[in-house]
Length: 517
Image 1: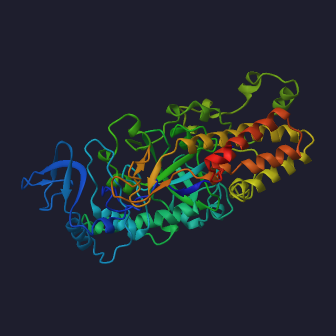
Image 2: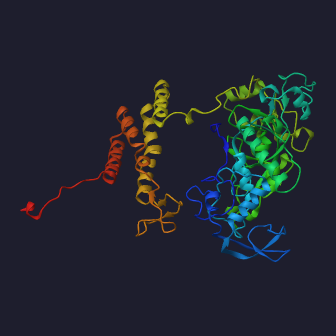
Image 3: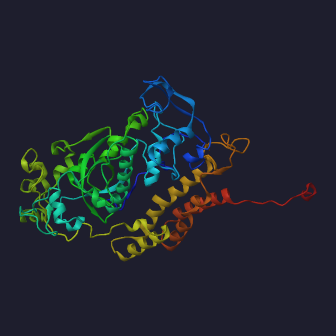
């Protein structure tokens, strides 16, 4: 099982509020307000013609209110950014906007920007946009088939409102500690996800009301207001979203979902990371016009949406799920004989035997009770403390376990983790780019003038000495404390010599020619 502690908004680097190009005019932080201090800026955007007034424009909606149509390819154009921003602020009613971060340029074929109003409202609600126009929240998957209202933070009345009228035994749901069976497309999300989606819902409501002239939809003030609302769940490197419904919240930094739902996203139920998008955000703000016109560029985008999961169409790994209330004695007897699993398989009730019947969606059982599905660690110790502290704890544990050779543990840590990092960072430092501190432009080679060619700003390194050396001292320390091969110690010494040679400034004294006679 992968470590279940990922629960954070999906952000590009650097994270923008708006998919609106401002080139280098916004500085290193790509601030829209800074770029708008100039009345017009020159950026590469798609040429569009208004179908109503015939005006050349660059946004999908013309300043006259008509719809524009794409013409030819992108070209460098001067756009009246200050005027467009003033119009957007008037339309949204935001007189003092927060720092709005935009992008340097668009990556799509037509290079069509989104309306600035969206960036204004996202900055107001402190939410960020992904490359396809949506706002996402990433969480680690954890499989779940049953829950109690109490452990997902909902009342009996709320559970009944969501359709959970009976417990797993068929009795009426009357208490918060009764166990109910999770519907295949219902999810229990991290509370931090719920809090972030409340902000996204506020952005969507403002967008509907102020930009599109429609009524507000979510009116969410707390995570509980999102119970019953639909979301699109999407796995990285795929292009098919799966519809889901929020039915509860957990203190674990993860998303509990039915094995069917995880498998439908082309995942293997083993702690992978997926994203959640409010359905209305996906329907209103997603556009292929923002994505690169390449196969790889279309990955990680909800191009299609599965609204109903068919167990016969999902990954076959989910079909191996056993759904028995108890295992037969013959299973343990076969295990004592080291029998082949096929011998006992006919006696085990699995999902694969239910495909096509009414029991393919419900009537699952489990063998052991638990007081709370999130009773274990809510976050892995891997994310706490320095690397030295983590290594010391790992080695302390290795010394206590008789089945573990601590010397071998140290050798594996150094060979497979520290040395590749040291060598890789040393190479990266020697072949690194330099970055402008003002506009963020990067150069493979330092320009002859020693300044940024785009804005004249100062240049700085992108890989620093501290990142190259970060594992050197700990590698030396643990290789001396434990019995590792001389060969490994010599490798560490050679890398230290290379680092010292690179970073040590050998000062030479001023010598005269007659000093050599």
